[in-house]
Image 1 (cartoon, rainbow, N blue to C red):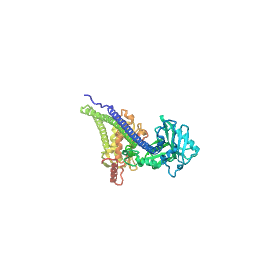
Image 2 (image 1 turned 30 degrees about the vertical axis):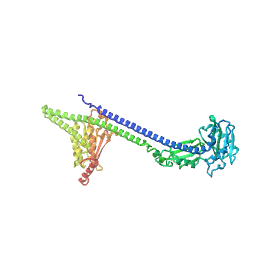
Image 3 (image 1 turned 90 degrees about the vertical axis):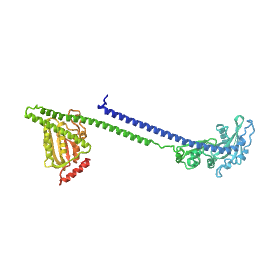
Image 4 (image 1 turned 45 degrees about the horizontal axis):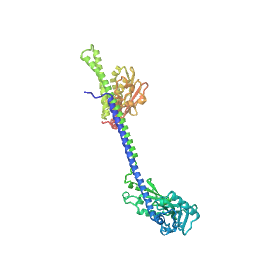
Length: 568
């Protein structure tokens, strides 16, 4: 059966796979967000087109209503003289006065409107460009010529053979504009021979006519309006050919949903219908969605941030796994060395291979020294494990700080001598303290172990104690290469080792200084690194000085442990 892959690349491969899945998830979320945005945009565009179509329908319906109204009045008034076709192009034409009985009431101007008193009936003969008039007022020569030219040109260029009437608004220069209503009389084969019509005021298409059309003609289906008044849904504006507003049903509301339609037969007037803003949602049947871009961008940003944080966490987990693997390897190597020495000399004693008493004492000394080193390593690992789980328990007691440090150094001297290292102490006497003896021992041993391990042979390690601002200070200075300033904080992290040491044959687990700082902080103190005279100087301060009563210091130590999160 094949064994599972457990090499150093297996976790990395799994991490890369997970990272790729996260990136794929982000890509999928981006695609779904785009599709949602595109669907919303398409939905909105469809709804906006529907609103514009509603406005167009309303405008054209109003145009149709006005045309029907004018057809029933103007078209009917002109029909008696224009509807029947002439049998020959040379047929005699009826007098324009015959229009008066039927057309006198068509498009009457308001009493206040100018020009109504100048109402007259006319006939323009296209065959000889002659003009016949009937009415109380005789128009000016300029008006006569304008009437002949304008009606003739309009009849040839704009008038459709199926129209029953047409309206022209204008007049000669210097005179009040008028409205000319006319219809064309055709001969056989649709040959135009004359135009009959009458003159009225230019304001013929006023509010009364538009309001009348809107009152009896539904501009939009009731299924769309829900029975609501058209004035509440649409703003209707009618403008003259010159751009003047001749009708407006209410104050104009701003809206982009509008459409216009021309009144082609009514002299170039234009009708514009605009959906009122407050009627947009109702006419769109609630189908006009708000822009979701900010929400989608926010969600994508959060998703991207979460993916980024996850990838960073994966990198950290991968790095932590690598560090733990290095830690296990380093600890195994460190434990194997003293165990090998102990086993070697124990077997020597057991087999009776020592020849003299001096050799026997030497063998037992080695066993004791390596046993102490092994005990120190095990204690270090236990302290590290407890510190990570916040389960370190301290048992403070009254002790002479310098004397305790001196005793620890004395126990370490044999190991220092074995490494050809001289340990010099400079201790300040009389520092009374409340501290955990085991924790203090572990701190000093870790500092000495690092100094001996990473310093050169034949060096001198200096251990000093002092009392500074009510704190007990321990300083251990070696003659090694020192620690770069940028690395002095990182070396207190768990599993961290300098690159030059990690790639060397020097054994190390990367937890010694971590344990030192954690134990110092549990005593309310701190640990840091300075540049020494030659190498590195590690400084540890413990807030354990005695005040007037030892109990006060014990309570202060208790508060410091609670502040650091330790379980006591």
